[in-house]
Image 1 (cartoon, rainbow, N blue to C red):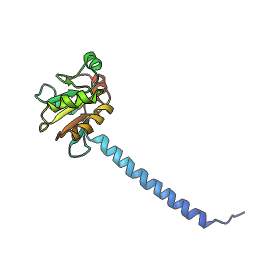
Image 2 (image 1 turned 135 degrees about the horizontal axis):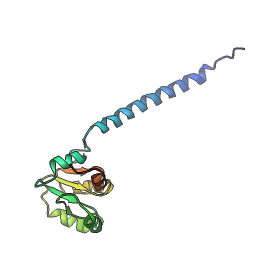
Image 3 (image 1 turned 90 degrees about the vertical axis):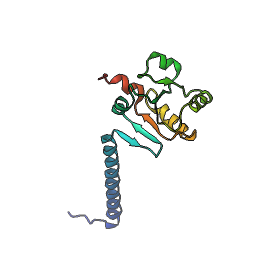
Image 4 (image 1 turned 60 degrees about the horizontal axis):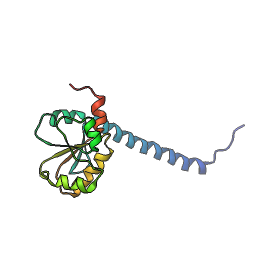
Length: 147
């Protein structure tokens, strides 16, 4: 027995399926594009960087390198010669960053990247021109053997 096809139902469903495939293709291109890049520019002032950038551009260099974790986290271990300016106390954080050179790049990190991302946005409001935010932070650092 052959059943009649209701074209009124198939057409809208077909459009929905095509739309879903189109959207998923765009997202997969964006994701795979981001995974290939070592540096992701969020805007003109905040640039997300990976561990390789930290190793090449920051370690043993004369740069503004700031660990924004708590003093307790910092004293348990930190990267290279990073100074500690904790973001937990916003007033102290702001006052300490006011002493740094806003015209020079500043590299920041936290434990996993969440706090440093918040801090980067705050630094823009404080007038910093270039903020490099270490994606994955100290967690990525300790998970990767030093070379």
